[in-house]
Length: 128
Image: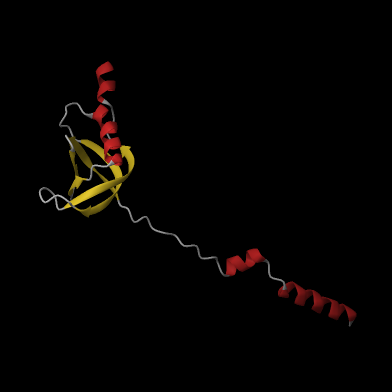
């Protein structure tokens, strides 16, 4: 009888104590994953004077000239053979209605420069 009570106590105590790790497997903790609301776009960009245009396969946007656009303008210069060459880039940007009455209906505000897709800088190809 004592063995039976001992086994019963062990079984009850084993099932009553729940391991926190096992509890997470039963009810996984829900983590909020926020989707990136800023789209990543790939296309060609050209800077002319104080204006710029960003063109992709299915879109054409004016570029809001701000500090990020100026940084990108400096980064693409080594990839241009001539002043009016377009350079392929991958950027994250917010699409906003254009403030200008002339030109494109929408502009892109560049938020992040991901990469410049040209394979070689012009200065590298000259040295070869």
